[in-house]
Image (cartoon, rainbow, N blue to C red; front, side, top):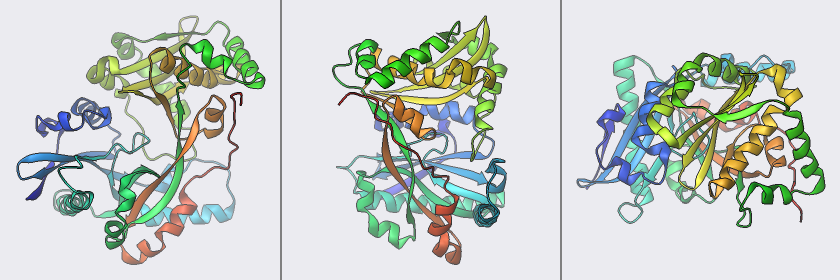
Length: 385
């Protein structure tokens, strides 16, 4: 008999949860606890265990996200036509959404089930029943209506796409979103020098120029004590980057990076860039098995262009992956062109999306295309043929 259990805190999760989710750090209790302790204030976390009789055979991460999209479009110059549609979209999607997945990180980190213990159809039906229960719980306990449902971030080859009948029955639209940028580490890259030699002349010169422009800026890993003492500065540098995004659905709290380091230890890395002992930039990494996941970063704008901080961060992330024998670097979304210039390749992704109002749901796919900040960009090919 297939059943499900909703958990309202990571402290409630059954002991076998981590054994089921041991392939993905973003599904494990330590990470979930870190996020709960330092979550964006518009995100609430729920967890669902799917059972075959008494055996846990699947796990689900669901977020309640309060979206007020008009406030989340940045003040960038757009035409009156685009502004008109932004206002319409904001009115359609503002309010509360349930996201099957994790809005704070690119990729499919929301669902997992044991394929020989439960079918995809049975698993998804249990997930949807849990969603219906959560809608009622949120209405009764928080007096909020859920206006939209999203199944987030699936690659083209994901088996979930075979479940078209489930998505059609529940009126969830398949929508293309921005790709995830990832760089596979080639077997012959046994050192960073091999990676640099693989560039063609144009991009090898670019690498050398970036390193020269770094000048007296020194990069070093931050200890947990330094992360704590520098929390305010790290947060300020993070906001410099976040505030310049054209579109954002959340802001991290100031204690976010310290909370992750506290829970994940060596699986979470913070690297700072110092100029005469002043922190002028940083990037973060999450070590997820054989995948190196890049996380949030920040920098002082007055040093970004002169010292090419961002480009140097991308190179340093690749260097860390190579020297520590990772299979790939997941660079995530945004800034696709510059990420492709260091070797990242776009991996197309889709979401499944539904509005709970039938009329609005019928036009949602078209509206989402207008809302999604898809950028026209040119993929770079930095390596020799």
